[in-house]
Amino acid sequence: MSIELRHYNGLYLLAALTMIFLALSVAIQPLFLRTVLAVPLASAGVINANVQVVTEVLGLVLVGYLGYLSDRLGRVPIIIVGFVVAGCGAVLAPFSPDLAVLFGVGGIAVYSMARVIMSLGAGAVWPQLTTLVGDFSSATSRPRLMANAAFMTAFGATLVYAVLIQMTPHVGTVTVMLMTAAVALRGGGPGQRVSCGCGAAS
Image (tube, rainbow, N blue to C red; front, side):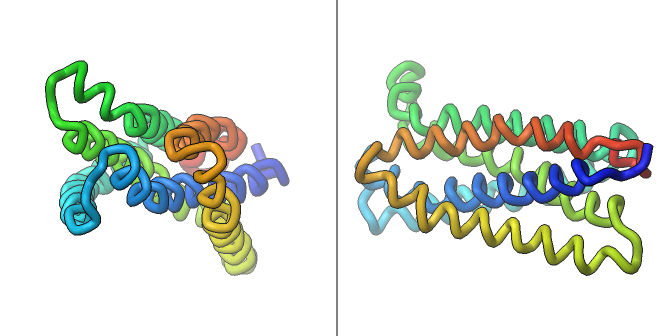
């Protein structure tokens, strides 16, 4: 099966959705910690650092294993599962105070776990996008394809800070956080669209 226009469009949409998810989950975190979990500003940096360290360590292990799996199962299944995992974490995050009461643990602990799940899911998606650029391109078309994908990632980040994060005073922090989950769960659609018979992409 040859690569068609829909495969390229799916790849560009995946790049935008992935960046929207990553940027929005980071941008909304200080607001959520301050307004919902009532975390002092001085402590927010410690929480951010702890989450980052855990996700980086787990990510180092995960990337190597997912590279092994993607060569055998294909890029697309990894992308879809990654988005589903990230979406599950994004659904849990805004309800971390309620879950903390339910399970008798701290709200920050539940939120940190949800953020780790989100980061691991997104970490499964992002490397596959880079590999798909190579799968979908030749030596002559690769620069253009990479430029288009980079533009879509920049567009996704711009959309987050220019539009989505500005909605929090009007719709609330939790609602915007649920948009993060919606973006992740929507990512499976474009993931299926890029599926094709070229190389290991299918």
